[in-house]
Amino acid sequence: MAFSVLIVDDCPAMQTVIKRILGISGFDLEACYFAADGSEALSMLRRHTVDLVISDVNMPKLDGEAMLRCLAEDEKLRKVPVVMVSSDGTRSRVDRLVGMGAKGYIVKPFQPAALRAELERVLEETDV
Amino acid sequence: MAQEVVVGVADCRVSNQPESSLITYALGSCIAVAIHDPVSRVGGILHFMLPESSLDTSKAEKNPYLFADTGIPLLFHQAYAHGAEKSRLVVCVAGGAQVINDAAVFNIGKRNCLAVRKVLWRAGVMIRSEAVGGSESRTVRLEVGSGRFMLRTAGRIENTSERRDDGVLCLNR
Amino acid sequence: MSELEDLLSSAAEEVLETMFYSGVFGPGTEGGGPYLSAGVSFRGSRSGALDVAAPEATATALAASFLGETAESVPAEQVPAVIGELANVLCGVVLGRVEEGGQFVIAPPKVSRTEAGVQPARNLEIRRVFELEEGTLSVGLTIDPVANG
Image 1: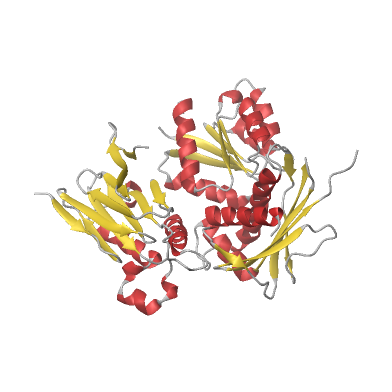
Image 2 (image 1 turned 30 degrees about the horizontal axis):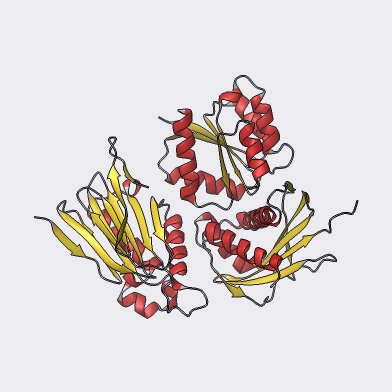
């Protein structure tokens, strides 16, 4: 079934890479939105129906962790699964974000197949 | 009648004969790229030795299957000519071991591994499974009819792929 | 090589191989500029900065590999973003290994064109030049001393 994705990353090149991986993985994408930080992401989520969020952690303005906190406090948005993609792979960060509701976590650097596998797992688990 | 087609070193074979199997042996630092379209039932194996044709352009002209960057596009184009479609192709990669007498500063097995990933990424093709690195020789076999992919490492069968009920080919872990 | 130099080398190999499909051949010698340089600062359990610099042709080739393009087709405006991301990701890998139980925040990268490679800093801990198939990549890592008391 077709689904919509929001990619949140302050690096436009990483946005391009993640979108490319989605495209060549065979996912049935209805729409792909982009945001450069957590604040922009929340604004996009209130304007568009999004089925999956893929988000960086370290971002200016509103980082991925603060964005996750905002999503958890929103009755409607808390249902949208979030997969974190970050260069921060420290145990404390991963445990904290998963504890806050992140459904998946991929540490950079990653191979395209690793991101695809994590997204497949989350999509199956959350029944998107 | 089942037909086994051997893919040699610096060689490439593609088939749409359902009773055929493609097999390639002695993958040390070399890499085998095996592809299969489960709908048109087209399969192919490339066995290449070196990463970049710029290392020796005259050799690449004589045998493009020697190198990743010239061999892989030919493998795919031959598959398309037999009826395969890019979006349906399942790709498995095996080999790239570090051979014991490789005295190079940067071992050729790893360079081949990086080259195959780079070429496929640039081509917009996802790798479904990889069995690369280590120090042991590998053998790869692809059944064209079923798409079953078998890998043998130093005599042990490592894994095989199976088709799920929904028709998707996946590798057992 | 010191433990930190070992750590930086293995981190650089991991990042370059995984997302840039580029192998590290070994130590290199910095060639002439101009360079594309990117630096990230970090704070948390430790504070400091990590900088990378590559000759422009090397930076373009690395960006092309990262994005799945060729050096001719890679959009020029994406090259600085890619080098910035290289610094960001490398910093993350290094920090994760320097202090496994640590907590860090990495600031967004600052990218610039410079005539020289990685600039020596007052507290410069280590500086390495790596030889790649695409050219050379210089990396500098500064970790501020732990405050007393």
